[in-house]
Image (cartoon, rainbow over all chains, first blue to last red; front, side, top):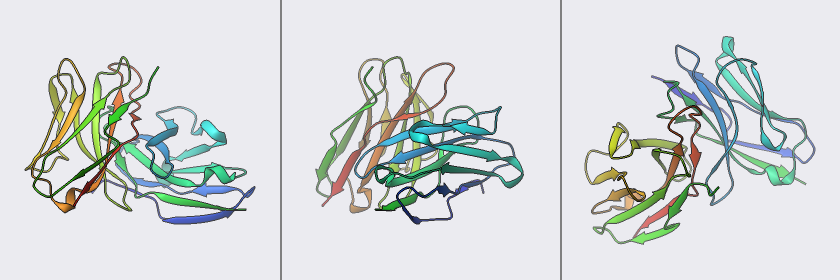
Length: 114
Length: 114
């Protein structure tokens, strides 16, 4: 079955440390890929997206993600985490590349230590 | 340019009542999507609509749930005879008719069934 996996349910990092959130998908072709962030009680904000081209994608708030076809991964990174980055992060896939149904991973909750 | 609007933000219903959730897409967007987020889970696709048409309702429960997106006015997600298991956050997203297929999310409606 087609799926999106975020292996880490919770991650805690110290402020200023680097961050990598993992995302793997299981689809035959390369889907469109997205990362969203959700603050408590809020909606989802788009961080970045990958459709094609350069496999390293820059997003808002200093985030970037790298698409690796061989690993079916789209990991999110940030070189230096700020306390305001504490939130839940969702990886999502549009496997039809048609802008209809997004399939979401289970999310990774990021906590930031001072 | 206002984002996706959802109301109410919070809704409390007793078992057996009806819940109506409204979504106004971003200006210029004609595609609307509804997702449900159960506690501690990721978002699950429910339905994809264009003006006056249901395009994909593969994620909608077979009974009690319906959605519409009329020619004028917001999209409505309707849940009849609510049960406790319907308690969740319901998110609406919208995307433009052409070009960018990115989905932009509203703040969600948190439904609590007593």
